[in-house]
Length: 77
Image (cartoon, rainbow, N blue to C red; front, side):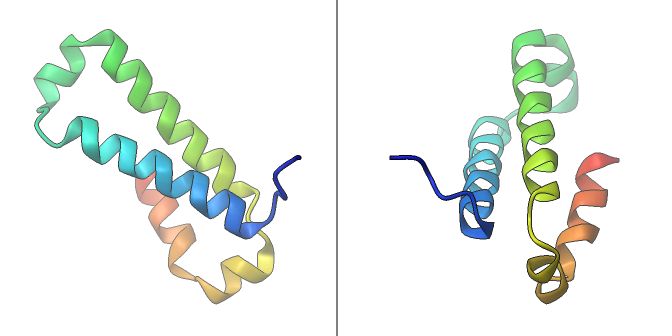
């Protein structure tokens, strides 16, 4: 059975990616991240996934949760 791809689906994907980033980055400093190509690539991939999934959220969802676009700007910069 296919997942229904609605706002809940995309928010859950975003939450899982954020949890992954926090879990794997909480003890890593910037020099260590830059020295670890695999970790850096993994974190960049997760951020891209977050951005792509956020774009798929409905306009209604974005209007109700006006803080989402501001958070995404922080992630993308």
